[in-house]
Amino acid sequence: MGKIKLIEVVGLAISIIVCQLAGFVGSIFTTPAIPSWYASLTKPSFTPPNWIFAPVWTTLFFLMGISAFLVWRRGLNHQPIRTALTIFIVQLILNTLWSIFFFGLRSPILGFIVIAFLWIVVWLTILNFFKVSKIAGLLLIPYLLWLSFAAILNIAIWRLNL
Image 1 (cartoon, one colour):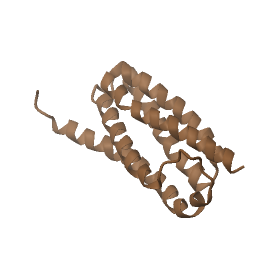
Image 2 (cartoon, helix red, strand yellow):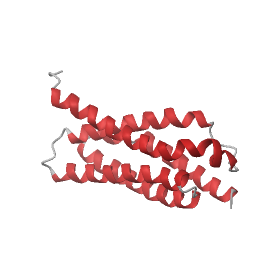
Image 3 (tube, helix red, strand yellow):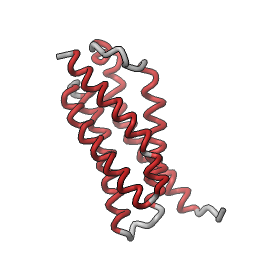
Image 4 (tube, one colour):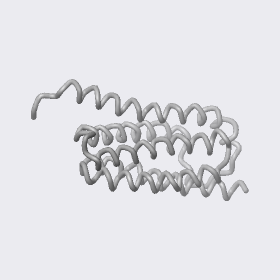
């Protein structure tokens, strides 16, 4: 194993922090709605307890940061890397928008529309990351699986609260 370069340590830290910040921005809209609006909704039987969401999302944002770093470290001078990271940024924005639409605007249907687009963009991110780093692509698989579950939960909540 070669020497770890300071630029790579800083790059990894920045990648993880940026992803965690996206989660933090989303939580600004989510946290106040949990004990009030969200608690009042009818939810399906497969809804996880509220406490599970924070550790799951923190872990997923951590994995996203590592994944983005593994792609970034290959060099921004290559078009496939720039494309992959641009798609990654779009999914990060959509991820934050989901919290704004679902919790902030209290709209499960708008949340579902956003999460459907998010799922597609995460899939595209994985495909593009695989072209650059197989590990980077693999690190996003748990995220896509959780999004699949979240989308099902989102649409079920919408249907139960029409």
